[in-house]
Amino acid sequence: MADGKCKAWLIVGASRGIGHEFAAQLLNRGDDVFVTVRKPGKEHNVAYWTDAKVDASHCTTLECDVLSEKSIDSCIADLAETPKLHLDYAVINAGVLKYPNVRDCDGGETDSYDDFAYHLHTNTIGPILVAQKLLKAGIPIGTIVFISSDSGSVSAFREHEDGFAAYGASKAALNVMARHMAAELKRKGSRTTILMLHPGEVSTDMAKIEGLDWEVEGQMEPPESVAACIKTIESKGLDDSGTFWTWHNQC
Ligand SMILES: NC(=O)c1ccc[n+]([C@@H]2O[C@H](COP(=O)([O-])OP(=O)(O)OC[C@H]3O[C@@H](n4cnc5c(N)ncnc54)[C@H](OP(=O)(O)O)[C@@H]3O)[C@@H](O)[C@H]2O)c1
Image 1 (tube, rainbow, N blue to C red):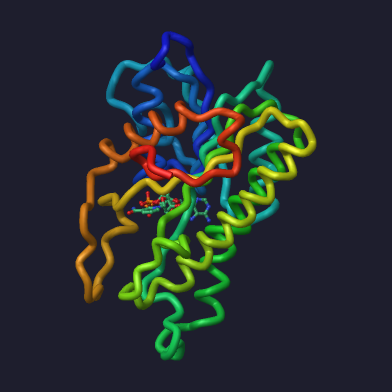
Image 2 (cartoon, rainbow, N blue to C red):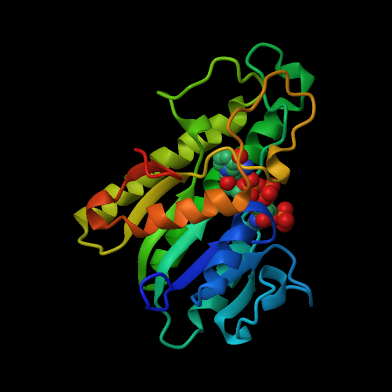
């Protein structure tokens, strides 16, 4: 707990990589963390995320597959049963990158239609539905953070990233949906802040891409990225709703 106050977080997609690291750092500092995994097993208790002696009551594991509306509904129904539930932060992190995905000119190399849909369903539609349903359930939430990517930025577009088009498009669509959500919430007087966050180039399973013909520069380990992401997230308020940030607090 950074400022001495225990906060409550929901991390959607916490089994591996960046989501796992979010859960680890937050539990280690004493926050309450609701984590979701696709297939919960006996191993998904507090010790899955932290070696430290963290009280198990700080960690609640839920099941959520963002590709299934039924799974999202059931996850939120389970979450809503928590007495006096208030989430300071909901980090919607789940995402996929299958490489190559839908090249512009030789889409025939991969299963273009299914690949494109897979990225849109997992990286855009699933995360947005999770947020919409959390809000609809009336769960009080301070900030919803969508883990996005600079691959979805039109201004930071990198021409050499062939094979990333569907992934980039899915994150661009996520950003547009999030901006609409933020605008609508603001207009309706909601106290929930919506943020989009690029975690940087992070050395996770997603980043282990075979056959890439360019070098990914500036890759960092998950602890560095996530420590900076948490700091950036906690520095934002309602006036920042609808904005996109990098892990190290750049707009
Ligand atoms: N790594 C980077 O350099 C980088 C850069 C920019 C943005 N990002 C974004 O950061 C987020 C996390 O990526 P990562 O690098 O940590 O990737 P990762 O190591 O591959 O982990 C992806 C996480 O998403 C979960 N997930 C995938 N499909 C899901 C589904 N249908 N329902 C629920 N959970 C699902 C995975 O769960 P399972 O274990 O069940 O598969 C896993 O926990 C993603 O949104 C990614 O786009 C990453």
